Each structure stands twice: as C-alpha cells, then as structure tokens.
Length: 281
Image 1: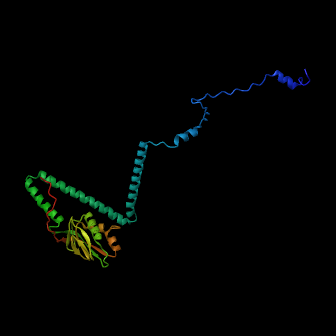
Image 2: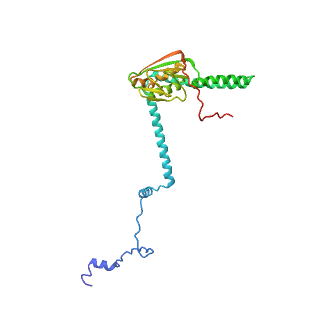
Image 3: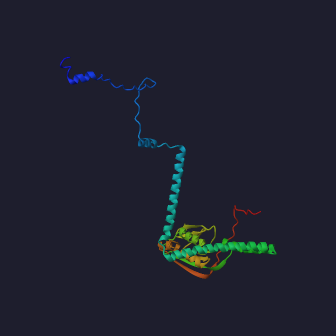
C-alpha cells in the first residue's frame, strides 16, 4: 500500500460502494410516436375562471335575456310616464287640488246617478201592470233626450256662459275644441257657440281670421252657452293648465258666468245616416 492510498480520504472511498445514478422513470410514449409533456395541474381559481369565461350562452338563454330586458324597459317607461303625469299637479295649490278632487267625485256621482236611473227604468218595465204603455212613455222620454243630444230640439236648464275676447286674433280652432271637450267631460248636456249647435259630429277648423264650426264661420268674441251643472263646468275650465290659463297665455280674455237658466235654441236638421243602420231585429 502506497502512502497515497493510505490517506483517510482514499480509504473511505474504497470502503464506500460506487455511486449509482438515479433512474428517471420514462414517460410512456403516446400513440402516434411523439412524446408529450403532461400539463401542469390547475388551481381552484384557474378552474373557476376557465369555467366562466368565455361565456357559453344557449339560444334559450339568449331569448330569456331579451324578454327580461324588454320587460324591464317597459316597466321603466311606465314609471317615467306616471312620474310625468304627476308633475302636472305637483306645483298646484291646495285649493286647486281640492277642487279637482271634488270634480272627480262629482263625475263619479253622475255616473252612479245614471246607473240608478237605468236600473229604475228596468224595474218599472218589469213591474208595471201596463208594460206596453210604460214602454211608450219611456220611448217618448228617450226621444226627447236624444233630440237634445242630437241638437234637433231646443233645451234649457242651469249652466254657464263663457265669453272669449280675442282682440289679438290668436285663438285658433284647436283651442275652442279643447274647451268643448273639457265641457263635455265635465257633464255638459247641450252646447252652443255663436249660434251654432255643437253635437257629437261637430268639427272645427281654422278659417281665415275666424274659426269654422261644421262649415259655419264664426268670429270673436266667442260665446259659449252650456247647459249642465255649473258647480262642475266652471271648475273644469279653471283647473291649473286648463282651458282658461291656455287662452290667457294667448292674450285672450275669458269670463265665465254661472246661471240658473241657460237657453240653447240653435237647432240642427235631423240627418239620415248614409251607412249606419239599426242592428235591432
């Protein structure tokens, strides 16, 4: 043994077995001949993101989403419409709101009275000993009422007189039509404007410096004679933003007077309908 082999380091190496390199397990080859490296395992967050994006939307889900969008849009429009309709009265005074509420109550009462009258007529027909005579009486009364509405007979009763002074010539046909519609809604039963009877088929048009009512030209001042309940007719014209305020904005002067007796004597000739016929057998 040489001196070099006798060193402690050489003796230790001779006593230890030779180092064997670690064997790396071979990855089995995939069919096709090429070897692929296994993909790393995904974390929980990565799997969640991968499942949510890109979104997978079916045709049924798309249709449901469109329907929900349309429903939501419709609700939003409805809410906005209701909000706009409430803004018109939001700035009104308390007295005006009370008057408008009273007017609505009066309209409801008129409808209830009309219903009660019809029920009374039905009971009279059912219980009358002489139903034929009762039917004739009611027919005559109904003919008189329809004549008033059709403008073929004169009428009188409580109501109002409204006079519109139009010195600037700014009043147009649509403004007078608004006044007529407002009076009808308030329960007017007969209306006459400057000697022209207003009926269901009445139309208004601008005619030069005046206004045409059923082809009859009238000029200011415009005088309305209206039969109905004065306590309903006058407030309907004076509501905030109503007929009177609209006309005053056009620099017209409006006066409304109540009366216990208004005479509407302008008549319309009875006209046979060209196409409409009674459907009763």
